[in-house]
Amino acid sequence: MTTMYDIVIIGGGPGGYVAAIRAAQLGMKVVCVEGRGTLGGTCLNVGCIPSKALLTSSEKYADAVKHMAAHGIKIDGVSVDLDAMMARKDKTVGDLTKGIEFLFKKNGVDYIQGWGRIIEAGRVRVTTTDGEQELNCKNIIIATGSEPSSLPGIEIDEERIVSSTGALALKDVPAKMVVIGAGVIGLELGQVWARLGAEVKVVEYLDRILPGMDSEIAKTAQRALGKSGLKFTLGRKVLGIDKGDTSLTVRMERLAKQTEEELEADIVLVAAGRRPFIDGLGLDDLSVQRDARGFIAVDDHFQTSQPGIFAIGDCIPGPMLAHKAEEDGVACVEMIAHQNAHVDYAKIPAVVYTAPEIAGVGKTEDDLIEAGIAYDKGTFAFRANSRARATGEVDGMVKVLADPHCGKIFGAHIVGPHAGDLIAELVLAMTVNATVRDVIRTCHAHPALGEAIKEACLDVLDRAVHA
Ligand code: FAD
Image (cartoon, rainbow, N blue to C red):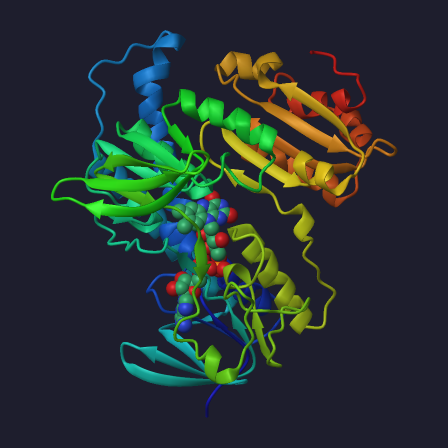
């Protein structure tokens, strides 16, 4: 007798695997179909985790070469063993992807390795290495994620012109690397290779880095990243890449002057965005609606235009982030189980794991100005924080934007050490509608980086103590 599943989830990334575990916790019979051979999706296999593994390894190397001497530690003969660094990254990825298989077994989630295609609501055909298999279910969740996109006329070969996937597995440190796109992925991977010895130039169409993040924070970050070795070429439109025998020539237009310029590189990383990965799902035959950019359109219950077919994560509109995909997955499954669930997209933190780290949540100052919303602003520089002084990581600041009447926090933005961890306090504050006064009333340990958050909140009220 064939199994009747409550939910078939197509895609085993952070959206799909977390949804599967939550569904099992709620007592549903659930199966996750994943085609790539390992669980964890883009995030674990070719995204968040390998990039953070290489960021950490390359930071340790940069510390040994550049920063240890200031602490009175002399190290001679430091060199990079790239094979060992990559092997460590691969092991970290392997351990974590196997960890999800363990979690599936523990929670009673069925897992099928294969590519899923939706035949109709309630029926999914899976192509495995052993042939085809059909699954019957009450609900289908599409969690197929995203893939790197390129620019017109530029073909990614993953050898010399690489996407993030290729940039996570280069065999040698390039002498010259051009990164197209000054977004999160371009900056993180650019910094990895710059630390390991490449001359890295980041080309960006806009006249600023990190589009979408607070522009004052982005400017501060650009200065700090510049000091650490990244070179920025902003306001340039990439026209194409010429492939020579030994090198690549990136042709660009300098937008302000309408002149043409060129950059030479051994490796070009195209980090110009990602698009939904929905090939082979059969969506056209089913008339599942998509938006103008190709993302699957859903209502506020994650339901597509076809009843019984839901979609979550990177393949629907919204921030393309692992934790957003997880939130979608949990909320979608809870709604299928007729529970109250909600994702507050206004409070999804975004983090860039460069050094210094960059993090933000809620409204940027640019958003508030554009919307004509009155706000009070508090800032605090890490240079005045005693823990940052002790560790020597003094670049950056905390910035808090709040309602001038009641102190409700509209947004918070950090560039500096451990910004990605520090932002959690302000995400929680915003989630529970805490005001800057509530954060100030909270006792912060000393000496700690978190004191900079309290001081920025004090500064909103013109009461900063250490500035
Ligand atoms: P995915 O993780 O893309 O998973 C979808 C899965 O579905 C894939 O494994 C795919 O093989 C599978 N699939 C697709 N079609 C089918 C099919 N027909 N049948 C079966 N399986 C199928 N986000 C962060 O929050 N923090 C970070 O630090 C971060 N760093 C990143 C660094 C890089 C280099 C990249 C590329 C991304 C990074 N991201 C980060 C983004 C993050 O990886 C994604 O937002 C997240 O993985 C999206 O999760 P998802 O479940 O929607 O999709």
